[in-house]
Image (cartoon, rainbow, N blue to C red; front, top):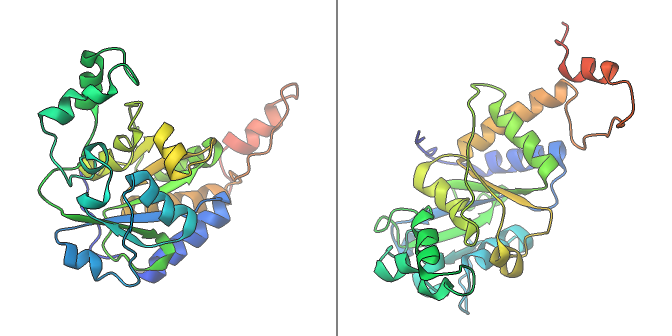
Amino acid sequence: MTHAAPASLSAADGAALTDALMRLLRLKTTPIVMQMFASVAEMEAVPRIRRPSHVHTTDQIVGQAARLGFTVGITVDDLVGPQCSAVLGLSPRDAAFERGEDFAGVWFDTVEDASAHQKAMHTAPYGRWTAMAVSPLNSGRLTAPQIALVYANPAQMILLINGLQHSGYRKLEWGAVGESACADSWGRALATGEPSLSIPCFPERRYGGVADDELLLALQPADLAKAVAGLERLSANGLRYPIPPYGVQMDVRAGMQRSYGAKKG
């Protein structure tokens, strides 16, 4: 199922969502948004946009927004290679990309294994966009982002997912491509419009500053707003972060009644 992105995301919307996420989940990393642009001129017109002076991975660009609070815009020429740019749809999935020969003998045993990995990756459609920008959700500088990115530890993440599923429930399913896990998060979300959870990979942690305990959820701003609304309801029902340990040897009945019993009134 593909959902249409909202026409706009106001500064007030972004600030309110960020405040709620920080209050309800105590996130340590700033939620950010990613917007794709049909032209470089549109990207460069974003207020206070930074442009790289060096070659980077997309992980580093995303990390500059999430870890440093920067608003950064890039084109294919700013990225180290197609493993980054193809995930964003800024370069094609050509024959060389699909073979993945550079990965054989390093990340994968054989060329066949490497090629199978490349073919399994989710990537945004090529030819639609020529530039990308990322910015903190609460900055208000990107007004029509395709996706938001939320870094959280596993306990915070499951509550965020519970919030998304609180109303209009559906089962959410993801995969793990392994190396190049950005294809599981922003690649999949840009390609399908679906909420997309990933275990950030070695390069995301080495180059993007992702902490040992962090997972990444990429989702459309409308889905993030829905998840926050669900979190508010869960919090009102006593289901909050941090989740206090009950004790592995305690009589569980009183605790289960509070967590799973029907809410009265």
